[in-house]
Length: 194
Length: 430
Image 1 (cartoon, rainbow over the protein chains, first blue to last red):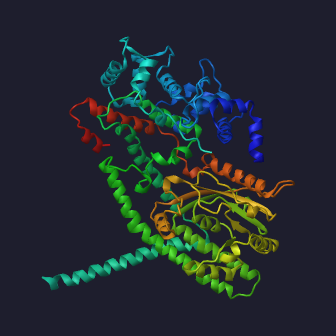
Image 2: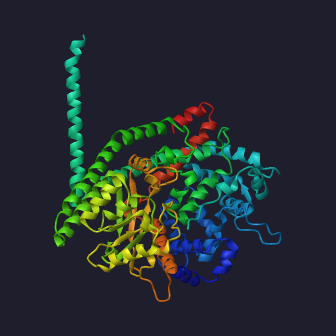
C-alpha cells in the first residue's frame, strides 16, 4: 500500500476531508487523480474552462449550470477540497450509519441533495424559483423543440401545482414538498468506483 | 406440377450451397491469413466504430425512458426531471466514460443485448426491431462463423504443436513454437471478435519473470497470449482440455500440475522457481486472484506467486462493458454456456496495459508486495477512462447530440400538451 499512502499524505487536511464528506481513502485518491487529470496545466485548482473541456458535460443541456454549482459567486477557481465537498452531495446515503443527534448534517443528506438541485434552478440565489428562472431551465432542457407558448404553459402549470403561498414563485420548502414522494437518493446519487 | 418444380429445387439448393461455401471460405481467408502473419486489415476496428454509432442511437432512444416510466401516469414536466440531467453531468465530471457504463442496475446505454438490460420491456417498435435484427445477425451469422474459427484455431494449435514437438530442442524449435502459439491464439482472438489495444508494450514480460494480471474471464489468457509467448500454469484436466495441454507442452515447457500436487505449496513453489531460473524458458503467466472478478475491482491477490522472489511484470486488463459483459459467473454458468454467450455478443473490446516490472523490496514480505502490485494494477485499470484508446473516444462534440436529447425530451412533453397526439403514437415515433 506504499504508493496509496504517499498520495494521501500529499493532500493537505485529508483526514478532515474524509470526515466531512464520508469518502473512503480509495475514493479520495481516485478523485484526486481525476482532479489532476482535469487540471491540465497543473495549477492546483480548476477553472470553468477545465470543466468545459469534458465532452459529456458540454453535451448536457444544463452543463453550464452544473459547472456553476462548483464555483461560489465571484470565484473563478475551485480547489481540491471544494471539488470533493461538492461531489460528496452525490454519495449514496449510508443506510447503516447510525444517526447521531448532535452531529452536523451530512453533505449527502436528502435535504442537501435537494438544496443542490434547487440552486440549479435558482440562478440568482434569492431563495425562490421565479417563473422566469423556470422558463430558462425549461428552455435549456427543451431547446428549440417547443414553442414559447408551450413553454409558458408548462411553467404555469408547474408553478400552479407547487406554489402553495401564491407568490408566483417556488421557495425551497415548496420545492421540497413537491418532491416528497420522489426517491431522491436514487436519482441524485452516483456510484463512486474504487 | 411437382416434376416441374424439382429441377428448380435442386438448382436453388446448389446455388445456395455454392454461395455459402464461397462466402465462408472468403471470410476464413480474410480472417485466418492475417492471423497467421500477425497483420490486421482493420476490419474489426471499423466494425467497432459502427457499433458505437449504433449504440449511441439506441442510447438516445432509451435514455428518455427514465422519464417515460414515471409512475405510469401521463408524462408531464416534473421538477425532478432536472435530476436526470444533473446526475449525468456529475457522472461525467467524476468519470468520463467508465462510471456511466458501469452502473449494473441501470445500464442506460443499451447495447442491444437483452441480457444486459434488466428491465427490458417494449419501449418502442423501432428499438425492438433493431434488437431483433441484432439477434439475427449475431446468432445466424456471427455465431457460426466464430464457432468455425474457434474450432480451427484450437485444432491447429493441437496439430501444429504436436508437429513442432517432433523437432530436436534448440533455437529452431523455440522459434517455431512461438510462431505457432501466436498464430493459433490470434485465430482464437478473431473467433471472439476481440478488439484489443495494447499499451506500453516496452514493458512486455521477459524470460525469467512472472507475469501477473487481474482476472475477469477465461478469455484473459487468450488476450495476453496473442501478443506474447508465455508459459502457462494450471491443473491437468481430462478431455479436450487435457488433449490441448499435452499437445502444448510438446512444443515448449508449460507447467501443468496434477490434482494432488496442487495442495503441496512447496512443490508448486519449487517447480515455478526452477522454471524461472532457466532463462531460456518463457515468462510464467499467473492470475493470482484465482477466480473471476467483476472487472470493477481487483480482489485480494493470493501471495503464493509473490514468494518466489523474482521480477514481477504486472499487467492490467480492462474490458469495455458497452460491447458485452465478459465477466464469468462460474457458479451460474458453465464454461460452454459462457463461451456461447461470448461468441454471440457483438464484440469483446478491451485494453491491456503492460506495467513496469516490480521486485520485492528489502523488508517487504510477500503479502505487502502482493498488495503493492495489486494497487498498481488497480490504478492503471481504473484510469482506463483517461487513457482509453483514442479510437474508442467519440469524435468532437457535436451540437447535434445536445439537440437530440432536447428533441427526445420535448417529444415526451409535447405529446401531453397537444391532445391530438396520443401517448402510443408518440412512443412509436421516438
